[in-house]
Image (cartoon, rainbow, N blue to C red; front, side, top):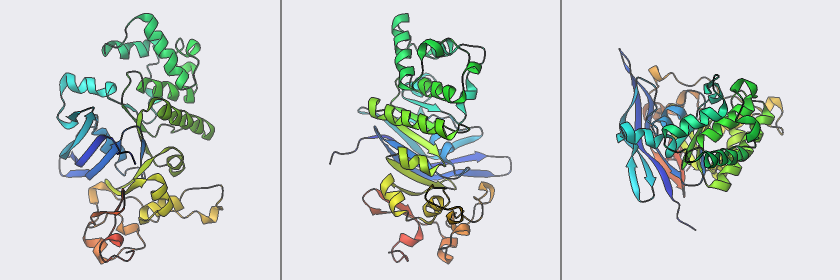
Length: 333
């Protein structure tokens, strides 16, 4: 078996929002390795900390949030870059050139007063990546071909002249413009119809295979993760509850939260009364519970769960669980 190549490592990252009266911890001890050339999904309910955690890779955490502990490392060939230490021009070059991001509902960020071509050109110009006019136009044609758009039509139109699905595919092409090694996709198909969602994810899988681009996919859609991802991290209240390859995590669904997410997902083979929502609501980060943050909603919770945060343990090769059930002496052992 070939040794895996790590592109990004989140090393024990904690992110807090400094407020006037208290500090809100949005992410705690977040450690995750992103394998080069693979699609890694981070899944969890809204507010679980997915976007905040991964935004640390671009130093794009919304104010007043900041990394208070840990580091994010990017491995560029033999060079190990501490992203949390980048500043100024180094940081600006790192964004888009090494790592780019398609934000949630990012199609709404297109400038309504500029054609799509002018917006591509402006981005490339400020990163000194235009070259000759002919070379640039050929690159745009190839990028739009990748996302199945007609460059002759799309480059000369304004955003309001395209559908939501077309604009989202333009944003994916934008993310690939400067040939980054990694693209972050934050709920990339939000507000799109089911058919368009499927189409866009088929294109992303094709791009991953054709170009070898590494993707981090942030979503709450279990079905998309099962179809597109190689690895999956299940996140709750700012911490990773379970991690492994997608077949192991969804096949064994050992953590109670992972099991709850899957049971709550609609399926063509399930009747409506077979869908079981997770009881309760995600915790408020202003008042996180003691111990395991999932214990108020977990049917397996014990006094230990309410008192102490479990350690992350490796169940099988690469399959990590953060749950007292799987600690030494736990009920599932």
